[in-house]
Length: 377
Image (tube, rainbow, N blue to C red; front, side, top):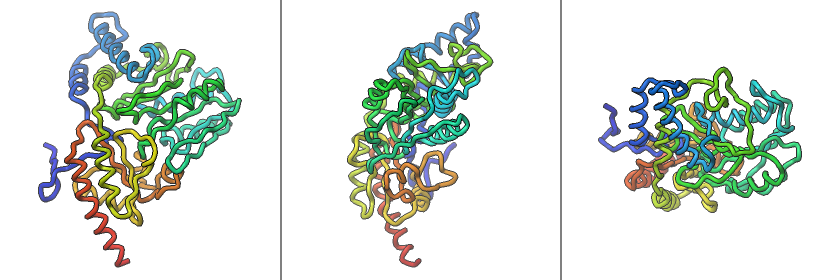
C-alpha cells in the first residue's frame, strides 16, 4: 500500500496535475473493462464490432471536447506524437508526403518542447526557415505578420508553466485570412473552452485519462498525410492496432466535466503574494484555472522544489519535460522573468482547500529557512 504521509505523519499533497493527473473513476472503470476484453475493432465478428462501437463512442466524446467532427479525430500514442506529426507533415517529412506546405514554420518562443524541438529538427532536415515569435512580459504573443511562404503556425492555447491563455481565436482568424494552417497545442486546456483551429492536440493524462493516449482533431480543410504506415486503422491516417482500453478511458474522461478550480487558484495566488519576494507570473493576463507559477527572489528553483518535497508537497520547477536537467525555464526566459527560481503549482480534480493551505503554511517557512542559510555563504 502506498504511504500517503511524510515523516511526522503529515499528509502528502499532490499539486503537479499539469504534468499528469490521477485517473478519474469513470476513466478507470472504462480502462478496467476494456483491458479485460480482447477484440480487434477492425474485425467484423461480434467482439470486434463491440470494440468498434466503444472506440467510436469515445471518438464522439473527444470530438465534442475539441469542437470538431468525430471523423476528424485521430487517436495517437500521445500529445507529443500528434504535435510532431503535424509539424513533420508540414515540412514534407512523412512517409507518403506530397511535399512541404511552404518554406517556413512560425512558432512562439514559449511553446512546449514537443513543438519547439520538433520544429527545429524538422525545419533543419527539410532545409526550411523557422521563425520564433517573442512574447511580452506576460507571455503573450503580440500581433505578427505571416509571410506568404509559411507552411504552418504553431501556438499553444494554455501555457504549460504559467497557465497564461494565448489569443488563439484572433490568431486563427489571422491565419485563415492568410491561407495558412494553425496548429494548437491544447494539452493544458483543462477547465477552459478549446478555441477553433485547423489542428488541435490534446492528451488524456492531463485531464483524468490514462497515459499513452492522445488525440488530434482536424478541420475539413486540413488533409494530413499519415505519420505511421502499414495498416488501415484510424481511416488510414495512423497505422497500428488501436489502444482500445486507453481510447475508451479517454472518452470517459472527455465526458467528465472539469471542476471549477478558479477559487482554489485565487486563494493560492493571494497567499503567495503575501510572501516577501514572491511574484506570480502572468498575473495580469487571462489564465487557466489550474496553473500558478511563482518566482521567489534570490532562491533557486531546485532548492525550493526539494524543500517542498520534504514538506510532502509535490509541485514542479521549470519545464515539465526538463525534470532531469532542471535547467532554467525557456518560457520564463522568453518572458524576462526569473527563469531559475520558479515553482509551478497545478491543481486538479482531487485538489482541495487543505492542499492550498498546506502550501501557504509550508512555503513561507521554507523561504525563511533558505534565506537564513544564504547568510552563511
